[in-house]
Structure formats: structure tokens, C-alpha cells
Image 1 (cartoon, rainbow, N blue to C red):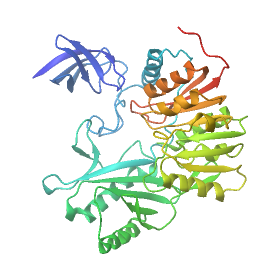
Image 2: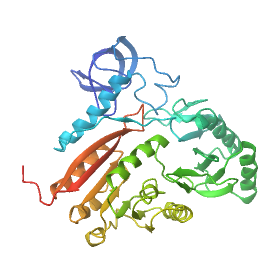
Image 3: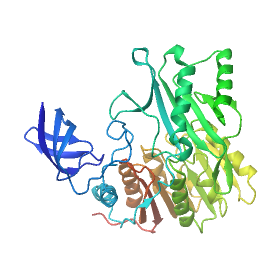
Length: 417
């Protein structure tokens, strides 16, 4: 049954929050002050109509906005969006009793997302290709993605649809990751399972028809027609299929510039959760670097890129699960600076080892403000001072935000509050 509610404020996920006699209701795609008509299901509200619009509302530029679950904020005016996103970070840090001033947010969308994952499903035997709807397993069929880089915007759905047609006999749910590289599209297919040799050969032909740089199945390379290269500083890196990459090229460049600036005087740097080397390879232009990463393929790619790039300082690499085996205090004490960029869950165990060390400088990068605050608080309680916080918005039109923090050992523990 439809009902009208007034949106009081926005939550951390960009949902509007209405206070009703039945408790809070969360309504996506709404703004504070708006009167909206919704259909309620428990604490969630499905937006039916905006009866009274906020002056901060604007027309979304994507025809799929509101159906596709990829974007949450296209209905916000730019100034309002930037203020809301920054304020969300401020509140998260205040909750952790971190009061370091936050610098201006860097818009790091650039040309757009350089990787997308499209889903191929066969409900009732009919192929659907697109993105998932918000909080749903329903596929929203798309023919383009406005927030992707030009090489992916229209072509990624074409590639995914062609692969779906090629593999439709199995009717298996497929997830097709498409990455834009300097030498063409790098595609990894997930969900199909093992494939017979004759079927793999058919995929080789398909990769040629689509002019793909590389095609992989569950991370196993089927064919590499051209090395899918990505520049990281002056180094050319060939990431393993499906490995982690920063969402946008500009986002990576912005964060790397902050990291390199902070570590300018460090002779030896440990880069933890290093991935394929977006920070390590740039740091190595000035400093010796020891890069540590769980994924062995990423470690191998970083090592090869470092060895093939002239003019870099010494780079050593180590494949190590930093959640189970964090670098210990005696190991950390050999470095002048530590850079740490863990997954969304953060790195509490590693933060505690750093807190007990003598490392004078830590640069902490995180895509989750709450875990950034938790790990930073551990360091602050042991005597580090959080000198700088820079938000980097490479996940534009979503609620996610990258945070770069610079912490320096003060030589004494702070007094208890």
C-alpha cells in the first residue's frame, strides 16, 4: 500500500531516511526535505513518486539510474553531492574521536571506470546481459554504461553479449569482467566452470572476432593476443586476469601522488597490500621498496615490471597473507615508511604490529572510512599523529570514498582522554 513520507536526512549509503510511527524507513534516490510516495517493505521503501522535490535534485544522466544498482547519487546536484560525501567521512572519523581537519575532496572520476563486470543470466531460457539491480539478483539489461571509460562504455556490453551467445548452451550464470588496457580489452569469464579443449578453441576464435587483447576463464588464460598493459608511473605492468586495480586511472594517479609526496625523504619503504604495484613502482623512482601482497600473480607481475623498467631503485617482493602473517615489529623497524592499502575490511592485525614498531611514517589508504578510522585509531593510541586526511572520489555516483591518511610517529604516546 502506498504512503507519503518526508525525508529527514541521508544515510551513509545515500538512502533518504524518513521517521515514521513505524520506525525509520530508508528510501533510495531521495533527498532531505522531499515529500515522497513509497511502497514500504519492512524498513525499506520503494520510491513511487516525488511529490515535492528538493532544490538539490537534478535529472540523472543515465537512462538506467534507479533500476541499475551501480549508481546511487546521480539525482544529486554536484555541490550537494560533494558536501554530503565529505560530511559522511567527517562523521565517521568523529565517531572514532579523530579530529584531524579533512582536506578538499579530489574528484578522481577522470574518463570513468576502467573495469566493469557484466552479468549474463538465462531466466526462463532467455538471455539477459547487464548489471544487477540494487539489492537484487535481477539483471537490468543495458546497452551502454555512461560512467565507464570510452573504450568500455558501449563495447563492454557488446563483448559480454557475444560471449553469452557463445556459451548459452550451458545456461550457466556468467560474470564477465572487462578491463580497458593500453592494448585493448582484457576479459575474464567467471561462472562457467571447466571447459573442454574444443570449446576453449572456439573461445580463441571469438577473442579474435572481438579483437580482445586477452581472454581468460576463471583467471586461466585462454588466449593472449596482445599483452594487456597498464602504465604505473614509468613501468608497464601486465596484471594477472581479474587482479585488483584501482577503479579509475585518475584515482590511482591522485593517490599515488599523495603517497610519493609523503614518502619523499624515505630511503626504504614497505608497501603492504601492494597489488601489482601502483604505489611501489612509483615509489621506486626515489626509494628502495619492499612490496608485500597475498596474490602470487600480482607479486609476479610487479616483480617483472620492476625488473623491466630502467631507472628504478631496488624493488623486492614477497607473497604473504598479511591477515594471517602480518609483518612483525622487527621486520617493520627496517623501514623509514610504510604504505598500507588493505581491502575494505581493513588490516587490524597489521596495524597493531605497525603501532608497536619504530616506523616514523605511515601512509594509510582505504576504501572504507570506518575501517580506516579503526586502524588509524590504533596507530594514534600508540603515539602516531594523523597529520593529513585527503578524500579521493574515484567511486563517483556511489557512496564509496577512498581516504588517504598520513601518520607520523610523535615520539610519545598521547595522554588518555
